[in-house]
Length: 466
Ligand code: ADQ
Image 1 (cartoon, protein in one colour):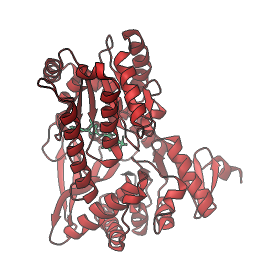
Image 2: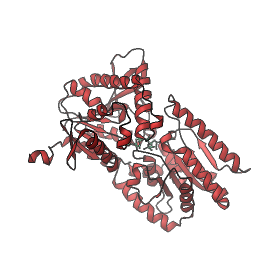
Image 3: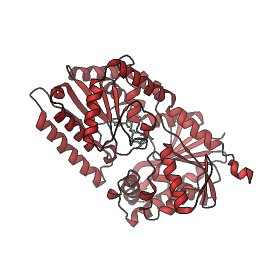
Image 4: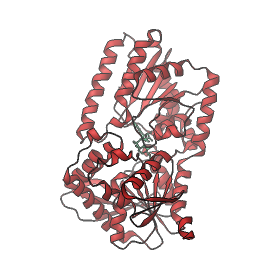
């Protein structure tokens, strides 16, 4: 097999960063690149007065990182625009927040063309190219136009929306057609794959040839569900690190006589933070006797601050947390601690382990890695309880969690009550099943399954038979 080329909007790690500040996904991809002596290509995160296509090449820990600067208009129309104001809300079931500005679509096409032209000279005949996420759907089409014949794979980290939602997108057909220039398209869950198939059947008379192949637009596309995981062993290892232990101790000291409930999310409307706060408020109202026995810590670093919907949700969460604390706080206790900061992975591990409840309630989520990290960081002899939204991709796998509808404050409140009351025996029983799943379906197995499927593009049975 040749080299592996990974393409994503942003190239993490940021230059010079240490491993502790890299996300699990970045670490797993970097490890794959080391194995296949590959290249990671993407936007530098910087803008220049004019697009030059100048590549900045670096070698970091055995991985070649190739980045390119974009123009300001590219950032506004492609990244803040089409990716984060159009596709992100629509794919997360928020058509009310989706903006359809013509310049966004043009910027999206332009940047994908620019990425393809900049990347083209780096591709050698035996390379596999693996493209990540909704920012780069048309990249394969642009690479094919430039004569690239290599296997091209695409993985969607976010949900694929239901058919009736997808057709609300102007030029949805062109976007879907662009996916058929890949050889392999992967989704997080079977459900998202089915939604994609439903679109292809209803809208373009596509057919499923066999379990793994769909034919449409005169092309055969290999498809599959590839649920992403985490490096559970590494999470267990860092949970025992000195910084994790210290964070654990600090949290334990702050919750003497109390139980900690924790939420950790990017500040994003898809994560259901307002609904979570309302669910916690309902819990306080419904359970006066338990009030002073809990502390709810929500860690939510701001993201995409250039997008108005993100500024608005931040304001609403500030007032909601203030309202709850104002109504319930006492001289020695605040029910909500709401923090807008990023933490190192080892610090997060300590927080997870100190929490009796992991509260993960997105309104929609491709997978949700926080749910898996929380499970992996628990003490096997005294584990906490995961409360998980049915609308996270992770709910397909983590069935022993307390599954809730995040839109219902009553369900969140009741799940919190159950989680806090759960005896050790039941907690251990549930956690073991969850941990087995997190331990066996790792980020490395996800990556190897995807790359293996891309390396093996044998024709579907139906085609062989005809
Ligand atoms: P995200 O929407 O970013 O990812 P998630 O899967 O939960 O959501 O991953 C977030 C990562 O950021 C986790 O590893 C978490 O530890 C880290 N993180 C969150 N808050 C942090 C903080 N305050 N400090 C430091 N780190 C923090 C997208 C999709 C998901 C999908 C992933 C991977 O939206 O559905 O699971 O990609 O495919």
